[in-house]
Amino acid sequence: MINDPGVNALDGAVGCGEQLRKAREAAGLSLEQVASQLRMPVQVVTALEAEHWDRLGAPVFVRGQLRSYARLLNVDLGDLLAQAGIAPVVPPTLVSHTHTPRARRVAESLGRRAVYVVITAVLAVPVWYVISGNSNSQPPSTASLDEVPAPVADAMPAVAPASAPQRTAPADNGPYLASMAPARPITAAATPGAALVLDFKGDSWVNILAPDGATVEKALVRAGESRSFTAGQVGSMVLGNAAEVEVKQASGAVDLAPYKRGNVARFTVSSDGSVAPVSH
Figure 1 (cartoon, rainbow, N blue to C red):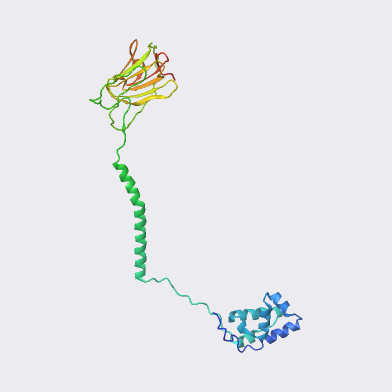
Figure 2: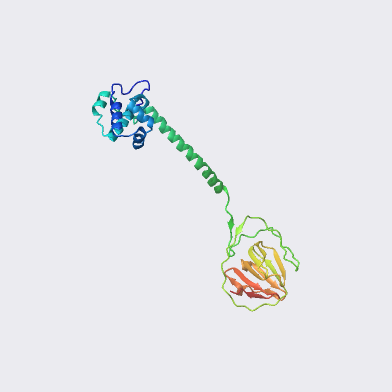
């Protein structure tokens, strides 16, 4: 409780200041020494001795400062303080805020639910949009080298020159993912020849590499198409659905049986056109 500056908080406590002053002088202490020991400003010590209580703030502070001064000088101010009529320290009144009106509780509950709904919508709508968008997209078709799609009826064979591989544009039936299992080495005699010609009786996945490992062709070749390569142009081949592929050299047709595992043929081609099994 803050004291009104216009009211003397210790009216009637005449004698406290005078008694303290006389005790200080009897002890041979100056105002500065008392202020230093009490850790108070000199002006506060002067106001206590002059009984200018209104300059010292609330009564609780005045009582504390008088007690500290009296304790320093071993002076008993009990009777004088009791006669001064200093107001006792009144603790602040505690007001309970635990009771909340029902209307306020309902409003707060609705507000929390509304916030929860908004947050849920913000998070759920983009997720639903992404999931629904992905569900409408069609996954790519997959095809094994051993199982190829049905041949296209209107695919026309193309005649390619011997200098470079030629092919006709296949119909676009969507992407295919080829799976190639590792082949076990098979020993076979080399077949001499100056060039290779591939005639496709059915659809086949091919992976044709140059001698330096570069890809010459890796795609699904449709039935009716053909490929031709000069000697030294191809280093290795993998043919899916090999039963539907006829490999020919200048000396005649190449038997793919020694190079097949299941319905996949793997073989290497030397610089002179000879065919040999893949080495591991």
